[in-house]
Length: 293
Image 1 (spheres, one colour):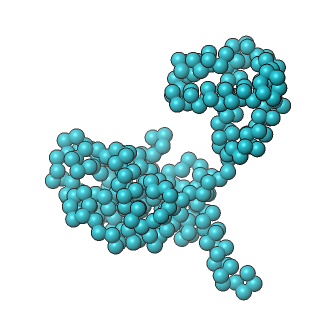
Image 2 (cartoon, rainbow, N blue to C red):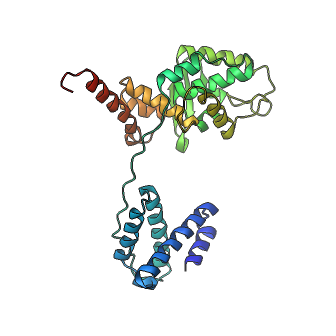
């Protein structure tokens, strides 16, 4: 039945090979546990108590909630398939409540380090250096996602109004303001950009040395190269600069709804994670300054 289910995911649901492999491994682990613990129950004998026993085993093995939830999702999909095929009469997952994922605080580069990078580090005095610095500035000053930066078109850059139109997740557009200093840098870059062959990427604002459109790995390596100069945080991706942008705004007292709009978040819940750093900063200030702390 498991093999038929995996075949169904491939042919009917069009799941990726990676996802199908993960589902198969999750189900394999579950049924090995059932066999070893409950003397090889048949598929229609399994009830929610058996599933809960497996989940307890996973928790005892220090598995993270995110991984446990993925295994529950695999099992739910499997039993949904079995019910649709009339292979079982009841779904033992109905009474199973998924554990809450632990909130992971976003990593960020502190303001001092970013200022050092953008104000003190020497970039090469050519198109590449200008483009590299502008890429970092736009990720940090505008809070853009990597894909939003790569796909930013010239027609959506309005330097007279000090704004850019960004196409975010779900093709949702938003307006992001620019500061005068960033405008000046963008004008300088655009002037240099027009001097190279842009036959393959004439619509896009930021391009590589050969005029082609930038791609994910190119931007990732660019950001990592420069962040290595100023920070020792483990992760050095373009998204870290987005987190740094949001954290800076939050620490400076920006309205949470305004941060949400600037980031293009669908809900305020996604933005609220940045308030943690503000609260920690307040706690530290209180402990250092209040006589009764």
